[in-house]
Length: 129
Image (cartoon, rainbow, N blue to C red; front, side, top):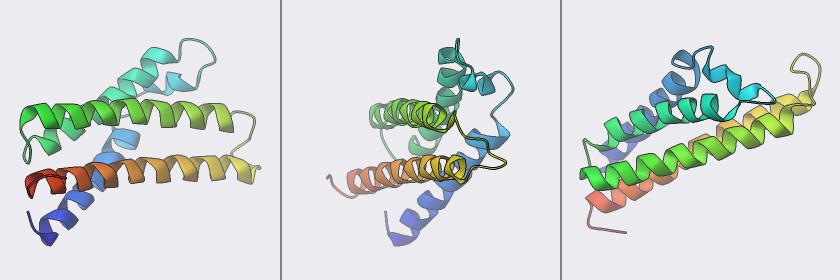
């Protein structure tokens, strides 16, 4: 895997994030913002991230590694989103800049997670960490 492959993989993860966080996040998954009963909607949303991560990584890695990294993506995504919901709940997106700070931190954390997954994948394909 060369530098072009690395850049392509980063871009693929950017598209994956857009798809999973926006286009494929249905009304049920938005239940992650509820005070009660948020767990399954958030798990479903994080599961979409896991599935797409697995599909991407299965092209580069043995299935066990792809599944491990995809599961890590699910767990990390779940935690990041839960922290964002709790931290931003008291802010109004229409008037409070703090709401947008939390949303930005959430998106940055997701991208850093993807960069780590890409780095691990790149390292494994090229002979190990």
